[in-house]
Length: 233
Image (cartoon, rainbow, N blue to C red; front, side, top):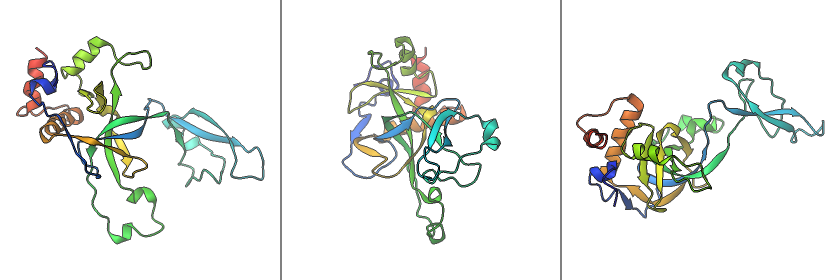
């Protein structure tokens, strides 16, 4: 049961989450994945020398900020263990954490034979899903969490980048963070599916929320528009 002061409560979606024992991914499925913290300025791994000049699989490296204006001035030390295709490529470094995520996009068509031939770049034919991560809300000393006043505003639907929910496997309040939506490899080593997924009506509301986030406009004939009007009175 959700509180009345929430999107779920005011739209009367008691069956927001439902169980699914299937082993395949789908839109609305709850999963776990390694999700990087996204900062405004990325970090790069820069090789600076070799402890043994004749050993090309070992390298000393440093982590430093990289700015978009520096991309044409990078000169990476050749390292056999860190292959790069040309001077414009580099390695970026992110701090990451295993987080619950919601699968937002899972549409993948089989590629024609010419795209699957040996020698083609792996990234061109890698199957992925688009996920948005959940962040825990509580401030319990082990996490930064969010201020209670802010949590209340998010629960009422004030900010398009955050969506408040209670995850079925943990029963804890969380924010679905649309601003960190990203691709994840569609592979069992990258994606751990749970047995929960959104109900069809819940997924409809999430789709309306996504339209609001990506376009700035909310369908006025949908459930979300009327719910927010009542919650933000």
